[in-house]
Length: 347
Image (cartoon, rainbow, N blue to C red; front, side, top):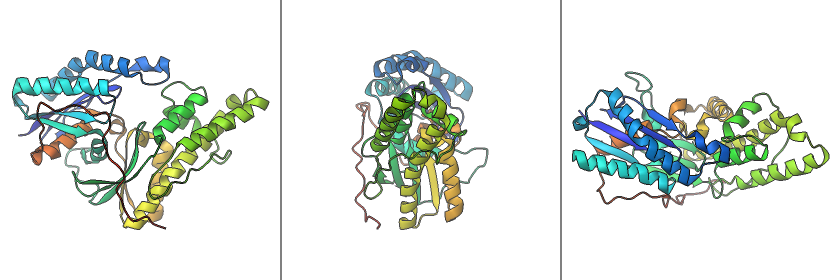
């Protein structure tokens, strides 16, 4: 019997989960509302909130799992990427608990965990998972990556954003529109009532499979500036259509690269991961592309899209099976050196 406690603290969610023989028993998450009044995550406040929440979150995960500490086989934690102060809290807690119980540590790459969230069984006996190799579009507030997944451990980054992430473009676009943080979900909400073809925003073209979302933010900025000059209430009068048009362009940019890679590498199984995977327009667009291209499309449950410890747990499960442990000298890493792989570029 293999039981692993997993801890996630990369940004502003304190989370703990217990996995037993590959079955996730729980997924406890404590969110931080303090950042709303600042319009974004404040790193120092985030790390303090993690310190406040981590003991109770881990206690709840252990209690609901019905396991005692001595029954744990290992402690897993997010090593990075993320906010250094936030990561420090999780790493330090995991080290102390592993040392006290004399059990091994398992470090987890946060981005790898987002992808492997697809292997968390949705129900007892679930065996419908992506088949290797498959493509995964990972879209979050801090990252946008197109990854070739060859097995549970072997990942190859085909392309990634060269400036802002798609999630960042959503949140900063929402801020320009005067929407509260986090604004990405609000853009999605207003867009449902709007016309996605009403306005046109710039489409940044990048070589290969890389992305860029700084251009569309600038396009929105100038668009709002020019229109508000003549119509002061322009945003309020056209909010739904602006959100729908802005969201449509971002989703279109993501789908274009994904479709190009899927065709070039002749991959049939396509997965979506990361916090922005909760965006309804992105989910719908992927399903539509799946029907058009005869793809098998995989999208995680909403609870596994945003930062959570269940995805850390399932990743740790596969690393445990391979005997991939780390020492107590391990330290968090705010960013990993993961340049896009050098691959043939399709025409």
